[in-house]
Length: 560
Image 1 (spheres, one colour):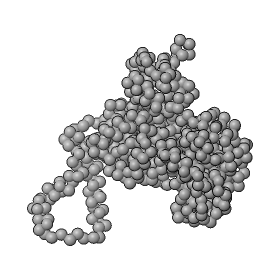
Image 2 (spheres, helix red, strand yellow):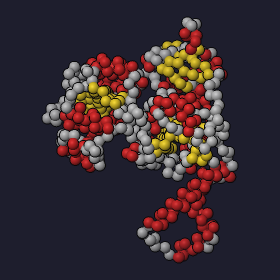
Image 3 (cartoon, rainbow, N blue to C red):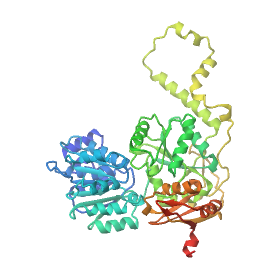
Image 4 (cartoon, rainbow, N blue to C red):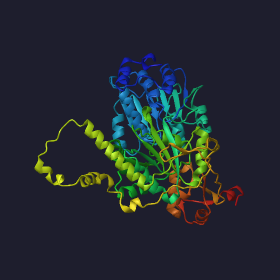
């Protein structure tokens, strides 16, 4: 098995990797590190989140920097501030024993004047978001005319977020003879075009395309009615006493709403979305890392760059419109060889999306049954008792207690004492909670041909409970309507922001706006007939002084 010490790395970098307990490079690191160290050619690397990309490009950059030269020699561009911060943190860990190296992250949402002040000192490596970097270039506060290497990390996501023009402008400011490396999860036509314009005879490295997601993630789906999704989510959290995970929503408004609902009911939750200021985001993430917050609601864009170890669950409150985002989401759990669960709260109308994920990522989904109220109650008590038992077996310190202190407790019966001890665990399980109905949709239905051929059903914890063939149910609704809206990437909007803009003017729920197909100056999306009628009749909608137009897709094609 290949080890880092066989890749010709600087001893100081090797020592830092040893401290981090990095011994064997991942597949992407094995393929990319030698190429970048030798500066053999430009590079296109196709790899998913969680494959070790940062070390793959970061270690060669640190190895090749001339620290006696006091100018910016490497530029790393990433789509979000969280990812910038994560990359910078990782690079500083790898550079622990390197002297005089300066690495700076610059991103929006933080003081630009402070960043300009930091850039006046020599900086060897700049890690930046496209928008903030363009601001700094316009102010002549950052000089990138001498960089030897440019890394575009998650280039596909930068294009999805509307940063194409910024990316092209930034690359135009860099020297012609630099080394350019492009990392992407997908090879779309746009990515291919960018590579064709700015990369010279690049080598291509592909990692993990046959298995887009970690093998140690259990992928499950629960079929529930839309109105029961909140209750289903609470049941999952209640059942798993050690739950520590991210719940993905499709809109900023939904993350805030869901967080508010569960927070009022005493759950340790918070949310992360694009409307938060940087100091607010940092505060939320710090609480999440410390596990003061154990349930984080987030949008796909806001979660970019989050790298938290030991996440037990990823919950998809709704499936993403961009199907490849599923792999990014689920890849947040099961890091470093650990196990994790990715659970989709699936409304029957979303079944076709699961079809597409199965086909694209070659995944098999298990049926997950939302625990019933009495099952949650039983599980919490059993887990609590088991924890007490383990604690008593390993407890070495004896607490000094005088009899008179505990005399009131000694007057209680065993049953009373046990009930008292269990109060903290069972206080939320009122009679009303225990009488809440089962939320699983009982009808059998066909998810995919691969699952039908297996013909197995699963119990609520993922184990096989029966060998009955799934029934079939038609999933193509005649109620769906495809609409056109003259909003697109040119408006610097993301998928969830398109929903938010439409909701602001029409009050049609973001949940009714799905399968957004975003183009440069317009988008198509699907909705139900009732919402379509309301959307098409809406008037006086403007964005930045421009009229917003919504009509049926066929009317656009027919020129009406």
